Length: 182
Length: 351
Image (cartoon, rainbow over all chains, first blue to last red; front, side, top):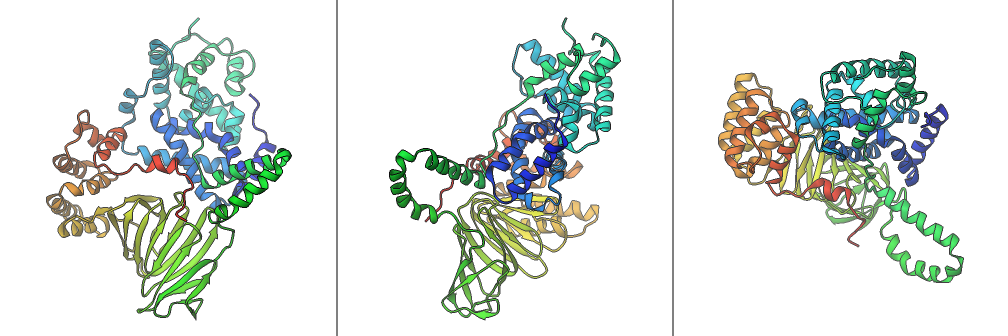
């Protein structure tokens, strides 16, 4: 997977400008670029089936508020903020640990489902910054540079979050279901 | 858990996904990839139009052999299409119903055009009807002042400085927007009456469909048959149905807008819950979006009395604010589902 380069950020800015002018394809392209990031940020906070619904909500809200975005180059960070706010608003009254129990089953064998649910639950118990970056990396399959570019975070911050988060995750999974199969 | 081979390899693979895979990270990647989703992009008005435009042009260019047939088809379709696509900057057509409404200070004759930046006013004896681009109509009642701020495909925005309008639209959600001195009303495809004074005091009554009110970071969806009070300040009114009793409405207004200490608020809540009837459960459920602690317990208990939750929904679920359970309980009210038709909206206009 190739990391998103600064020219791609410029390209995003052009897409935002085009979308503002009513170019449908441009908004579709923005969606294609950022849907995984939005899904990951939501999945870090809300149950899986809610995250899928909320992805659409976030893009609808972004679509509606696009004229208010001052700097088109900040689209990724702005979209991430919308996603975080939307998830917070949606889930502010829920107790996450209890929600996890009813997390819809993932695909695969029962053992894999159980292990995946345990791993996801463990990630969600991590501090927010680690939770987000690990979900974007491990669930959405984004690389560190991609995460940095699309969320508009500093590379160093993402790198630190990934490594500290992974360290904590290893410790927590040490006593739980997820394990490395030979 | 097995240990990574070296910290450097672990770091590089975790960071960039390249180099020798850290077995534990790779395993988690495989395991968790099942949660990855390809969520389809919701249908947006601009996207729908863009898709058709793209299709139309690509066919026109490539299918030269069918040019004559396409031309005939276009001739047949054009009048139909033109009624459905508003041009950027197109004026809203206004018509006098009674009295002497004015546009930009000039008294209207029978008809007039309201352009972006324009102001339409009615005095105490005047009424006017406005065609909202091509998506609907609006009646401007006596004593109103409205400004057209934006008109282009996919976005019709106006400000109601004071007065009352009745609007009916058939358009994608959030296409028609009305700013007031208080909150902003987003039409989610519906008919509604909106009344406000200069201070932001008024009421929004939804006749059919849904309207979303937004104020700062707060938002509330009001279904057909319900209303929401507008008051100066930073709060939105909890929606209530027309069947709500006067004591219920009065208590709800105090809860939403009046500054109260804890004891006063508790007493007001008691009045509200005593006055609540089955038709008020929607309002109680809306209050639960922000209620906490003892207030939450009392609202849940009264709500459950008035509308017993379906099997599988427990009091604990509702106290905890479990989204799925709250949604199921809300669905028992039989209100139309916003999201379903919002996402699957199609461009069906009345004319």
